[in-house]
Amino acid sequence: MTEKNDMEEHIRIPIDGTLDLHTFRPNEIGSLIPEYLKECRKKNIYHIRIIHGKGSGSLRRGVHAVLEKSAIVKNYQLADEKAGSWGATLVELKH
Image (cartoon, rainbow, N blue to C red):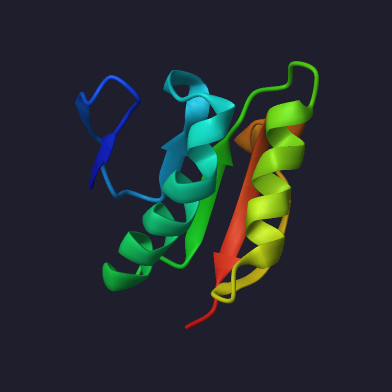
């Protein structure tokens, strides 16, 4: 998957079930996450980990707001200690 940022640079994102948002700005997640989830489904990846970091929680809330709107998300929850605790969200997609 290739995503353009505001400076028109193309960033290659591997479709492997883990999306690390540390290199993206909060205003980019609204289009990035839905596109990434669609690409995962195309590759039969139904369990995804989105790493948003712990910080102030604003990026986590933004990620959860995007997931709430997605028709292909079956459910999501904060990760356990092994998967990143509250710095990551685990997503299950509908088949």
